[in-house]
Amino acid sequence: MSAAPAAFLASEAVERHFPRASLLIPSLEAALANFSSGAEGGVVQPVRTVVPVQKYNGFLGVMPAYSAMDDALTTKLVTFYEHKKDSSVPSHQAIVLLFDPRNGSLKAIMDGSIITAKRTAAVSAIATKFLMPADAEVLCILGAGVQAYSHYEVFIEQFSFKEVRIWNRTKENAVKFARSVMGPVQVCSSAQEAVIGADVIVTVTMATMPILFGEWLKPGAHINAIGASRPDWRELDDEVMKNSVLYVDSREAALNESGDVILSRAEIFAELGEVVKGTKPALPEKTTVFKSLGMAIEDTVAAKLVYDSWSAGN
Ligand SMILES: NC(=O)C1=CN([C@@H]2O[C@H](COP(=O)(O)OP(=O)(O)OC[C@H]3O[C@@H](n4cnc5c(N)ncnc54)[C@H](O)[C@@H]3O)[C@@H](O)[C@H]2O)C=CC1
Ligand SMILES: O=C(O)C1=NCCCC1
Image 1 (tube, rainbow, N blue to C red):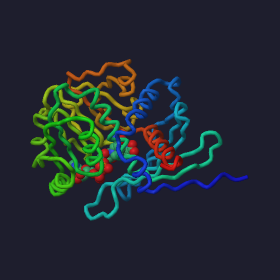
Image 2: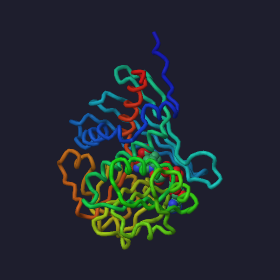
Image 3: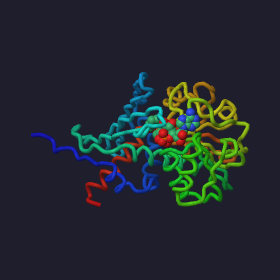
């Protein structure tokens, strides 16, 4: 007897079954809490394997995870390449494979790019809910790529900022961003101009050297640091790292993969999952950094949501 053929869910199907990042927030909060509960949480997730493709300035990441609570088993394959200006392909491309945990059969192959964009933004929204200052009014986004759009969408839905600012290395793309999203966005000519006075900052660039400097920060600001996922890459300078309370998605990943954490030697205060569980405090009155590396378990719960909706014929 052979297993039923795997379903293929292209990006249109994934988008249809996962139209808004916020749909995933409850399952992601549970997954983060389970991840930070050790064996009891039932999450098995090794630090991802990353294969450098040095000749072409690219990387292949392999991200497997199993969640006993969700009874879901996946692996994501993701490539990320330094974006060439004339490149017609996105800098990040991904697929997620969903297996039947009972027997190992492959159930679905699905586009992973939308999942990556939305689940990352949803996790940042969770961190922001806990860590942003009480009276946050100004949102600042540094970067204008895929993650900038997904973060904007969920942040605008979940919070009520009075002002949104964007800066991008290539101003043209910041202007394009401001023109294509729903609400008003102020395009800034420098990162400093965008950051000064901001309450919540999202760094979503492919920078390998700091683009956010501590001397610009408003005390009490919250930063979601999404880029710089290699041990020798930075988005934040030492002053940001040393003068903030540092939250991470995974301690193990941060100490292996994050140049901002490793090179600054900043002390990790808590995993976001510990805050969700209530075993570590959120300190929204302090200046806080959430250093996100991205976790396979986030893809697992997203893939399950998509597959369950698809197989129910929604
Ligand atoms: N933490 C997580 O879970 C995830 C993190 N990421 C990371 O988020 C970042 C953004 O990803 P995407 O939006 O998908 O990429 P993208 O290629 O769509 O956008 C990258 C942005 O960075 C800018 N940029 C490129 N080089 C730069 C530099 N040296 N200095 C300043 N800006 C620069 C580009 O102009 C562009 O606006 C990347 O670092 C990516 O690896 C991506 C997926 C998940
Ligand atoms: O979590 C992910 O997916 C990624 N994180 C860092 C960069 C590549 C994709």
